[in-house]
Image 1: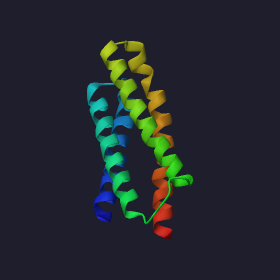
Image 2: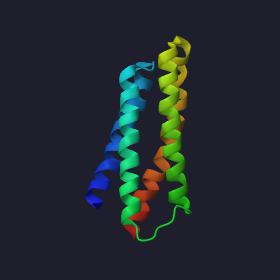
Image 3: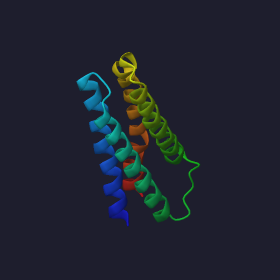
Image 4: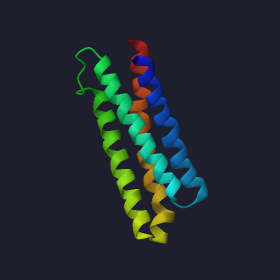
Length: 122
């Protein structure tokens, strides 16, 4: 199951990065960005669930666990907010949305990197 968890988490990185940077480069939130945000969220959540099943009695009450849960919550809020922005059709919000995306992406990288570091060191 470890290989599936690693693949899932890595796909989350790929999809979320494509969505966030695609939006930044294109200068406006579009529907395909939203789809990619949700795919990244599903991959990250799936990978996290698999990793938690693998860890032997691991607790989320550590740096990696706490930042990981924060990242998933922020990804979910980010995707929901993107949905709201697109449904409302507010052009100014679509153009400025990338500021939130970059912050959430940077926060998401913290548990991704710490997981890679802590995973290798175990």
